[in-house]
Amino acid sequence: MLHYTTYLLKPEAPWVTFVHGAGGSSAIWFKQIRDFKKSFNVLLVDLRGHGKSKDKVYEKLKKYTFPVISDEVMEVLNHLKIEKSHFVGISLGTIIIREITERYPERVSSMVLAGAIMKLNIRGQVLMRLGILLKSVIPYLLLYKLFAFIIMPRKNHKASRYLFVQEAKKLYQKEFIRWFSLTSRVNPLLDFFRIKETNIPTLYLMGEEDYMFLPTIAKLVKTHQSAKLEVVPSCGHVVNVENPEAFNKIALGFLTRIM
Image (cartoon, helix red, strand yellow):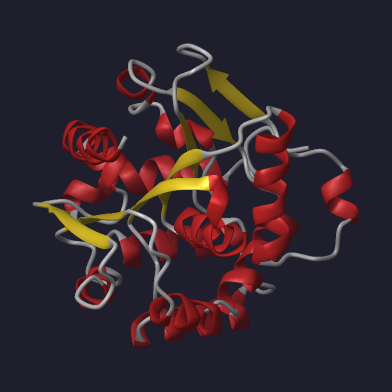
């Protein structure tokens, strides 16, 4: 089972489950815990191969697919007897949450999808193809630093880049390559997610400077009636790190309104 951490408010309180992105860990949410645990039971999970989820059993599992990974998250909820939860995700974690919603809609109260990835644009596709060519040639950490700089290029994104690179250092190279390969094949799944509306309350929480992913989300919310978009000014891809005050206020406001 994945490693997890809980913060219990009271048994009857609603749950919020946080899902980090590739190369990160549940540590990425450290600026959210204090505010969220005042109103919710909080569950943090470390995805396979990340953080403290490094059991050798994962080395033997060949299948790295979004259905398998989403089932690993749901295994934790089942273990804790959490029937239903709000889900908050960042970056690649938003794809996992969207997969959970597709397969287990009755378990999802709402979604807060920050730095949401719903399409790899031309630049993103070129980046992934370049990575596929180079992943066995150059050190994975150098590749990760390059990706972090392209996705989060501005001076005010420096803290996010630093945090993600520090977390990526804890990944084994084989693990990085597996997750990279998974992400490089994701576009057909994202095509489906853009077409299919969930009818579950969804907040897309994006940085104004998240130039690789914001345009797709701005277009998507015009056709998905259950979704809304909030844009944080002067902020890049990792909204919860760059402006935690705005992130917490907007996300908690959304969750409180739909409770």
